[in-house]
Image 1 (cartoon, rainbow, N blue to C red):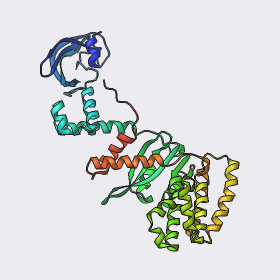
Image 2 (image 1 turned 90 degrees about the horizontal axis):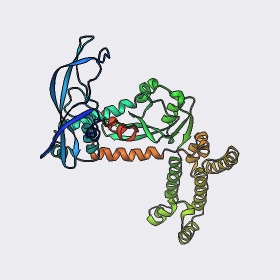
Image 3 (image 1 turned 90 degrees about the vertical axis):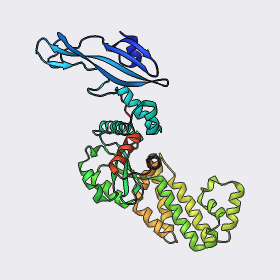
Image 4 (image 1 turned 180 degrees about the vertical axis):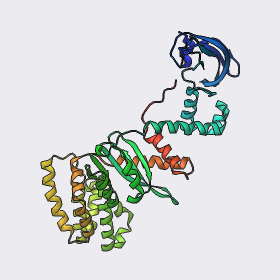
Length: 396
């Protein structure tokens, strides 16, 4: 076996000579004759040979060019002709798969097309075409994936003209499952009807969106809905801050007090807690709302509770909601009551839409790097390639 062929990533080649000038020229030929492609008969003869010129990776700052002696064979049994096929080199291509993958990974790492034109000797259009082709290959590998057992659903902004898009995330593997334009039931209906394996979904994590809850009930009837902990706590804080604005608008505009009010009480330093208590002592109604907010937040942050413990916490939670119904936070109490079951399930599991929000940040960075996307399918292709694919493309 040729060691030079192994180093090149093409073990079936026998290297005849190597010339090193501005670039590295490798002259090679096949080590042995293959069986007939049509009838698998081992006896074939060489009818003619021709030379194939291929770009093949880089060694240091020099590009390796392969000059392959490619035979054309004639089968002695079936009489048919065929050309020699090199592993890692597609028919009629002028670059090896290793070189194309190197260009993809280099461009994906942030190197511009203009820089690749100088270092790899290919045009910007070729770089874009290869990059897009590798993205399509990665996404095609994910096309037959079953629905995940734990599914996260959330929305994110796409463009002003096209509006919002819906992200589906596999929260067990922390990978983007799919991306669809729109966030309404009508825009997602055709996709969800054709989605195979919906019975696999056992848990759906979402924010307090009535639209997504209706979608989950209709298309994933066997799944349990879990409210996302971050969104529920944020909703509580928003309602409390609005109530504070009604009670004392001047205090609401104080940035120092605003920071103290937003934070959890157990995260405050002693002097900060004392400062907050001095302020709340002048507004008893606000102090009562703040105490209720702190108790509510501590309950909402519970997770991985046993069924018995969750049942005990539920009675305390219902009592607190009953008190809020007769306070300025009655709208919050109404919302929490309507989402009572998903919130209680939040105590039993630890899953949240945190990975989904992280992917949204990554999507925003990708959009900024591309100076925006007009075509949603190209955007979806890039997102699934970078956030959803976890396979390995073989270099050879």
